[in-house]
Image (cartoon, rainbow, N blue to C red; front, top):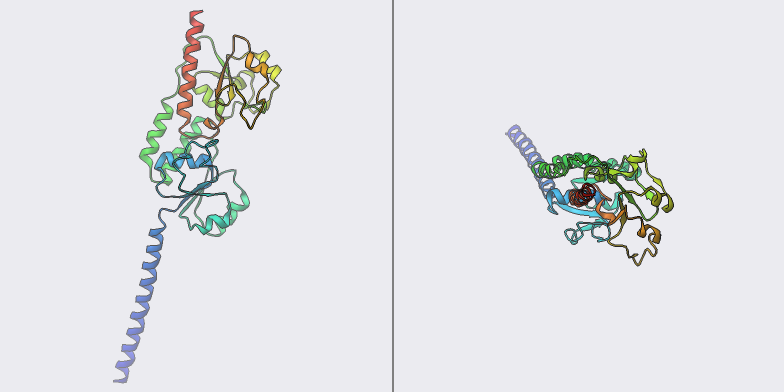
Length: 290
């Protein structure tokens, strides 16, 4: 009889241990399920790509600049989301299931997040339209949005101009700090995709450099692309450009484009390429007519 009681007690102890273990597993599963939508994006360019792919669903937090109209195309969409910098403590406290960061983000913070067991994925900065397509493909798989990624990729690929004009037209994007981006840059890639030849490519500049306004005026590009909406200086940046730049030769056409339109590699590049393509076609028509 005593042995029976001892065996019964052993069975009860084992059964109790199984119940406790099962409860822990269920609790862990429920916790994992409840956090399944915990995506944190820490870079404005990545924010824009994520929203283009899945909207704001599953997004817990985005970068600090995401709701700033001066830099962001998605400011309205992300108004209600938490904003974060690339800080390990802040990000870890959100208990994310996926953290997206740029390849040039702080190495120290990346190491800290990885040590904490955070699922961190790095997305490379786009230096060409092809890089945008690649980033969309990578994020499409990560976010289970492959179909949408395919749609956006097809949209980007549809912008390639079939240039048949014998006269090559040169376009130069000139920042207000006198910087000209090199051939190996997203800006030059967008310019080429729209039908123009980039000024940097024309001169053989693979990397960016500073150019004086005098040298720029003498070069007489077909199109001069300046920062901003129009020729008027912004309140925060008085005398943005030298007046001589706004009175270039009749050969050069000045266009004003907001910096945020090509500061990031996102599907927004499509509208910019289309706008520049229209300018290209207008100039080609004028050239052929003359």
